[in-house]
Length: 206
Image (cartoon, rainbow, N blue to C red; front, side):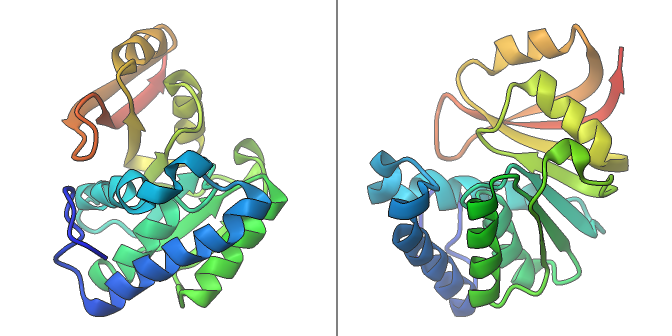
């Protein structure tokens, strides 16, 4: 894995090899399942892997469970699991994906990558029993208003949500404030000058 903005350069050779293996698996499976846009395959490492990896630096101390919603091709969930295997070995990572073919990919990838910390739920987010997670994440899944509904279901008390969002994040925040109250920190993305990571806690319905 080539060092890139967002910082995956300080990981072990084993972690770097796992990230490269994930990229190879995704390129192998993508023609059949369309896990990511074909247009992004040439920049898979920066567009998806590094972009996902930056979330890991916001893992709270003592966190034991990370639940990724709508995991798709494993971004950020599988990347988080790979980084956690080295940097947070006690962290359990849940991947929730309702598309059965994508769930098969996630399970296969986790097995091939030797990720014992991963559990895949091939179900709709709203039907999975509350995971009581310390961190909930979702990338390119739904508007913030809907993501907060999912987070409210699956977060433990005191947990945080990490939602990467693009240039229109202020509009999504305004829309969400009509139905929710929450604390939010807007963290600049290391991979897109117009994007942010919304770090959200204290979620409650209005």
